[in-house]
Amino acid sequence: MNLIEDNFKPKKEDKSKKITTIILVCIVLIILIIIGVAIAMVYVQSNTLRLSIDGVSNEKVKQMLVFDGDKIYVPIKEIATYLGYECYNGEYNDKSEDPSKCYIQGENEITNFSLNSNKIYKLNLQEKDANYEYFYIDEPIIARNGILYTTTEGMEMAFNVSFEYNEAAKRITILTLPYLVQGYSTVVLDYGYVELSEDFTNQKAILQDMLVVKKDKENNKYGVVEASTGNTIIEAKYDNITYLPNSGEFKVESNKKVGIITKTKDTRVQLIYDSIELMDSDAGLYVVKRDDKYGVIDTRGNIKIYVEYDEIGIDPSQFEKNDIKNGYILVNNLIPVRKDKLWGLYNKNGKLVVNIEYDSFGYIASSNKDAMNLLVIPNYDVIVTCSNKKYGLINSSGRVLIGTLTDDIYLTIESGENHYYMTYNNNKLDVEEYLDSQSIVARDENGTVLNANEINQNNNSTNTTEEENNGQNNGEQNSNNDEQQNGQQEGNQQSAEEQSNVE
Image 1: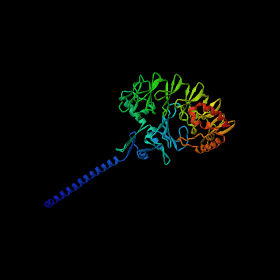
Image 2 (image 1 turned 180 degrees about the vertical axis):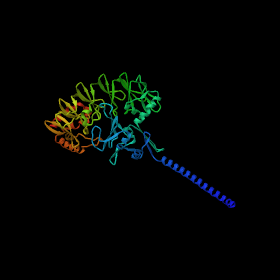
Image 3 (image 1 turned 30 degrees about the vertical axis):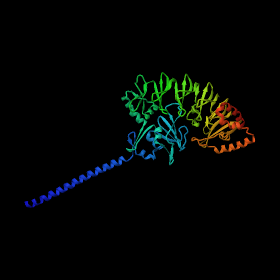
Image 4 (image 1 turned 90 degrees about the vertical axis):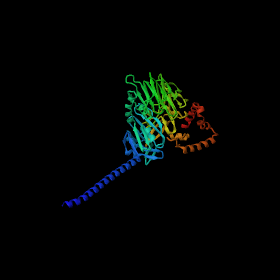
């Protein structure tokens, strides 16, 4: 019996060793497979684009992105909710379902977009009676399958976010302004300041690596520092500081006087005014107030319109359906000014092109229930004038198109479209038809001529008439070319001619 057991012992031991070896081999293989899978996953992940918003991964937004060469496009409406905004068709002040336009609305700001335009308009909801500010983005708004898209650069400007694409690491990082504000609110303490400015416009300076900060709670003095380093840009010695997003400069206030200082510490405008407000960023103009009088200066503080007027600009809220985004500059060129009770117009170069002689600009509807207030006829770039309760039209150069002869010039909306009429001697006339008959060019928002056929027909008719009348109307036809030289004198002469034309 012992002999048999002894004979089986080596065989059992060999079998146990084989099983142990197999198990070890399997374990090693499993470990190698796990390592291989892990390496593969790391490789795949390293070559897979990842996107995060405020530190949280977001696969849905990643799927929205459209890569087009070196540009990345995002759908405005679809991405809005992920960035703290709501998005609607049409324009904020002109509600509609127009799919070629949209606007986003946040707690503090509105931004308007238009198809094929690289110009966006922003309205600060925290400022009463604020004008729109416009900004240029790198590429025009495009449409894909009926959806409006902007580039990531446009998204940064419109939504006040930071966008970073690390192509090598396949990482996209989007940081919203509230997230950045929260983060830097503690950083400023390390820089030696008590708090970050709570003003929404000032907070946007974070996106340009700048912080508007308060030095201490007792003296309430403000300054500006670099967000990334804490280095001083503007010393904390001012009673108030306001960031100017269009120029990247700062309006500073001390002893109830304001001026403008750049981020390189240059003083653009001395602290000698009671108030300063941006008029137009392209023209580089500001409206200033001193001793209850208003004027206009440029970005270097040079006076363009002397500080001697009682009012500059028109209140756009009176002309809601005109969708006037800037009450300081009408029809892209003219600046309304009031002295005592009369109004006139300067151009953006600071030249008086319409004398101070009108009672007002614009028509305020009263008796006609279908009529709406009217200040400008947009496509034709003309302004409604008023004297002695009679109305006329002036173009963007200050030339009189119709003297103040009509009983009214007003806006109506018919089948969703704007129409413009005037009443003269109890006759209702279509203003656009009249302007076309006078070869006044109408253009859309993108500058495309709308009435070329009518103008060509009118020019042919005019040429025939001129031949028949031995050139009696040459002076009127050439007035466009001579208007800058002849100015208001020629406009006054033409008003008499227009009376006979309207009749």
